Image (tube, rainbow, N blue to C red; front, side):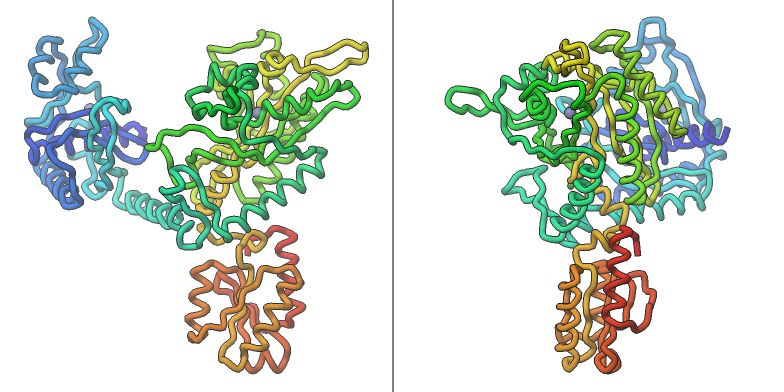
Length: 576
Ligand SMILES: [Zn+2]
Ligand SMILES: [Zn+2]
């Protein structure tokens, strides 16, 4: 009920905003103005670019309109009436002309403002809480999302049922802004994108490289423990392989242009699968060898439009944590169980909560109905056997595969695309991938594609936001910084730092001339988990005074006790 009411309020505010914009820009051309999850927006074609001052003025005018009061009146008119009413509004005319014949044209009036609209709306502005909304930002948006059409200015507003709810939402937006991985990535010296290198291509700085290395080690260890075999495949490959795989047919838009090598066209690798398939096919495989699990931290390159690139989250070159499992039909369920054991364990280690989705056959698909039934049922049974809560994403599979998708929620409750596990019904046929069965005859193999992290870039970008840059000890680029109180403690401090490094910890020494408090503040800004302060007392007792990033004071302890504690936190991959 309140959902409906809130949606009406949000949509009505979009109309009020349009009325206010028309007061300021009588020649404004109006696009569309729907309610969205947290408020509303409206797209305008305006004679000039809006400034923050404009936004404030529009909001003031909206408040003035609300104070005057408006009634929203619905009216049905004929197409002819509509065409003349909106004669000066080309975008509205375009929408009118696309209405299916016979569909009634509905308009809503409030005061002198009239909009082509299906509704619904509140009856009167009295229903809109005046302190429950705020205009937030302006962004460019192509008319109908089509980059060949005009770029309009989209004004976003937030709207809730009360001022309190609005404030809570604004606080959350601030928190998300504070966690932005592009800003933290710069402040913590994790990565950069250099326009002279190219858009969408990530440069991993030493701090980012350490985080990545630790995650890769964790990933590799877990895979080896679970019977995966590591492989490496080249970054370029002859176009022939993508003809066989079908990527040239269905995926060419995402691939970079061919390069000529001795008259043969080669491509940058967009997927790791073909390489893994050819390793599998490098000799005959017996049913006894299966399952074969080939894993690779494989770097791929895919074309993304420059407008869609976003820090580490949307890039043009990235390293997938990829693996392909080749198995017999009777092994499929057991393998999917293994994939879920691994993925859920890793997601829990990083502190994500998650939910599983079973994505079933889409309208357009290849493969037989029996194959789809077998693969989808196997995935479903695994989810049921584990007692894992899941939702069915009806028709959400890819055209060649049903899949299990895991969605993640981060520390601020945002949803991320997580691990995925697909049963491929295409490539085993296209590549004719087989094993020799017990009867000595070639049998069709079952092929699973799966990623846990997705890509190192996207995952670590998300992780920066999830942890707000405060990485757990095992991932922190610097795990402990030793802070001498005065110059005379520098020698002992250097000795402590050396001992920590010898124990395998990433330790730094801050022997700058600054005061202790400034050093502590700097370490806190750099989100170093442990600060070890050493002064006269510590030198005399061969101890360190341990402060945690969170502000907690663990007091004085011997260097060895600190080493043991830190190594134990690292072993448990615990958050401090
Ligand atoms: Zn409307
Ligand atoms: Zn694959």
